[in-house]
Image (spheres, rainbow, N blue to C red):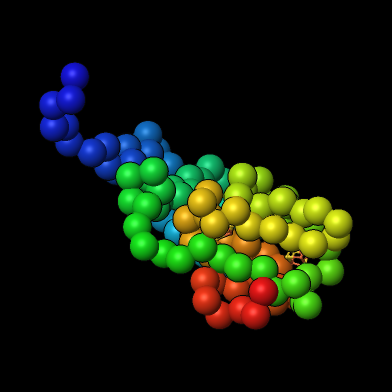
Length: 124
Ligand code: SF4
Ligand code: SF4
């Protein structure tokens, strides 16, 4: 109805359900998130990972779009696996739609060639 409402405390909620292993990760930190998933899968007991980050549709700010360094891109398509609608690969070269990129930096973490660089830092 548009009225202010309290946010649900997810950690408290799942603890109240009896889950002892509760942790919070930043989904834009791939290394942290990946490590958390591996550790909790191996834990052998129920666990909950809360992936916390404000909705990009509400927070889209001035982060510059990622740019592609065409000299470094190998066309491997690893960045496509993120499912980001701003990324495409054509003729073995990644492209980033600057109108759709929020500058979240996920693809920068994925590309092992260093071909994706935060805005203004590449010679694309
Ligand atoms: S930008 Fe990086 S991950 Fe994407 S196709 Fe090029 S080399 Fe592969
Ligand atoms: S920085 Fe984020 S939004 Fe921009 S192309 Fe990469 S994954 Fe997509």
